[in-house]
Length: 111
Ligand code: 5GP
Ligand code: ZN
Image 1 (cartoon, rainbow, N blue to C red):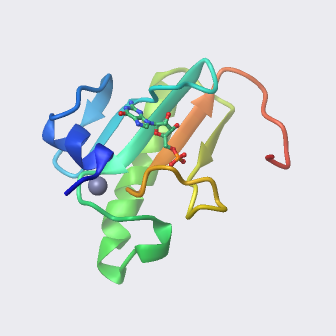
Image 2 (cartoon, rainbow, N blue to C red):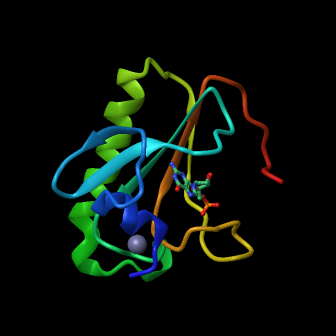
Image 3 (cartoon, rainbow, N blue to C red):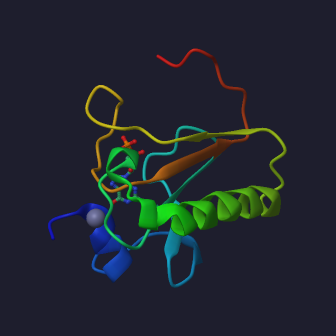
């Protein structure tokens, strides 16, 4: 499949991996928008939150708990988790991913 994040999962594109298990991988964003900016993705190709299925519930719970743990390990007490969905949502890579951003203050609403 011609998907950049599937290629990262397969090891065909190198990434700065911070965590990996049988279901997920977390790696530093190539173009960081904060002092800490990493992505957490399922190894399974899911296009976005909009294409989640009921059978993905345990996987999503695992991603959320992993985000909590990784943020703790990085010493983050205050941070932002973002998933963009579709073109107007700002999604540029059509493989579900959660941005974890920290180390600075963030504005609301987003641009
Ligand atoms: P989106 O815009 O889809 O919400 O986020 C995609 C993110 O993936 C962007 O922040 C972009 O910098 C990051 N990204 C795109 N290609 C690569 C890559 O090959 N390696 C890494 N580490 N990050 C990537
Ligand atoms: Zn993919």
